[in-house]
Length: 350
Image (cartoon, rainbow, N blue to C red; front, side, top):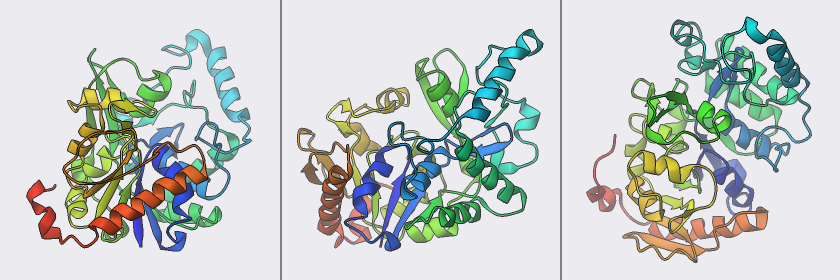
């Protein structure tokens, strides 16, 4: 058994090759839900759905978002209607439109702190993709937990791995900017294209949420952290009470999303700087004190105080992913005999 922690595109790409190394039927994937956002009344779970669509063979692998070949008629009509409304609506057309504070925490708890109007929808959502979000939201409204709703969708897409949202309770990743704004991560990354500079990152609701029983069970197995963003992909998980402590009690290998101080893709460098961490492999190691081993690129000469496997960590296809997954397997084999007590000196967990 092995458990992957997934956020963004790094770990989903790794999963393409992991299926050749570990039996998918004995593989769990814990997905970040801090990026989730409610738009126009339906809950969008980007990191959950990337794994869902990839495993179901329908992911758009050019964008690593949404369903391949999807149409966008509903999104385009929403944009037309918003433009036609003109002066009748406040704000810039096409900009994210947060619902007011009272609405943010009213009704469905899973929507808290991340509710947007569909007027001028700022994320392009395909028509088949939207059907997934509507089904998930309706299952929640019928009384199912997010874990149960995701399980229904995983069955519909014939997923081989056990896909688990990190929590059944809401956690919202909020970006505090140097200019004093507070933006949901999707507004910061999708609408603002990673601007303005980050002053801090908050995981609102994490203190009141907890990992599900299924996640706690999955964390008892060896864990692989793919080359995902340490701040916004893994940060919401680590902010959950007990999550980091569980990682300290099981073998963990992490793949760095950096080669030295060069990041492969995405806003990891800016976000790590924003939260006061060095944007580099060394900074990732500092952020993951519970990791027993790292997989680094062969060009990354960072000297770490833990077991290191080196390979070409760029993942462009399933063969690349298999190569990195094999390095993860070697790293886990190297540290699997360590007793939890031998890892304890790295400090306590949450």
